[in-house]
Length: 191
Length: 188
Image (cartoon, rainbow over all chains, first blue to last red; front, side, top):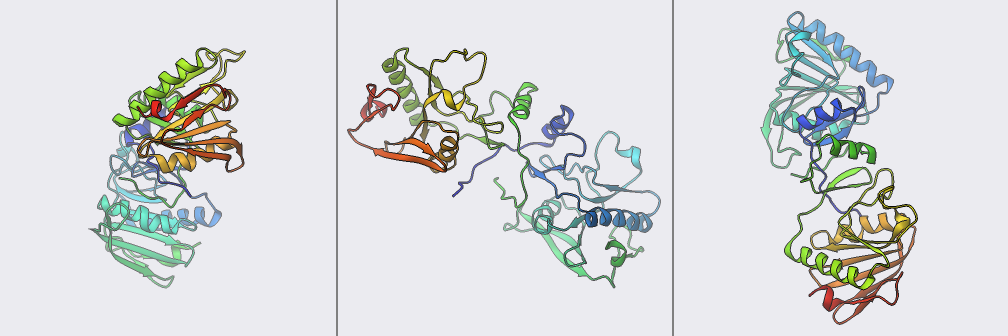
């Protein structure tokens, strides 16, 4: 039997300092989620491929004036610096040379073994930060899950969840909230 | 807020843990210990906890009178990812001075944790940790019930010999059978 313990919580400032002093090396698969340092899912080839597919599809969908970042840090809140598989932010690369983007208009996670974490844990964290559009490329069931309309829910991991969840099969397409005219075909997202 | 995380937490080595202290990310005011790579926060000591730790310190220092060293709330190195700070450790005199190398499990004759809110943790996770590192003797002092559990003979997963003492009992040290403390003195 293990008893619950309270581990030291990290702030984003402390986490950035840990990177600076080299406790984490670049590419170390770690994310700060609600004060906890979480080891990210190892990169399987379908996972990595799906990231590339999402990046291409979203670059086409959003076009000029938008930046599609892969596995880059997001300055989400005081205790969180996740590195979503793909995030779309306004502007261009240099706009974020001083600070990570805080409010991407779309965040995408590719899930193989991390489905529960991506749905319940990260989903709750993103909803709490009021990220309006959250997609999970679910490689287990080969569907796209689209989460929208953040709402508070005391039962959720971080007190928030998405009110709307839409599951789209390979025949369907999704339109990002921030690029409503564009259509992203689910088949294009699946390896 | 304590959040249950389904995913694996990043664990730290002792080297990383000390680096954090060196650069000031962990501050002297952080009451933490490194347990199996996790930086665990210790609960703030209550009045009774302080009193019993002080009583034990006085009694052990006096009764052992130079035969061993009493190390109070200091770290102890059990493994590359584990550096707890037990309430008390009775450590042997050794050839290599302690300024040269940290206290390791072989140096420890007796470990004591004084538990109030941490009783379940001290009896389970900590106990297995100490037994696994072959710490010869471990006392769990239950400050609320004024009882002591004495654990001796470490083996895989725990200690083989356990005795539970209460009331007017006397407890002696395995390493120094002639040194005895009464529970009345400890819980005074």
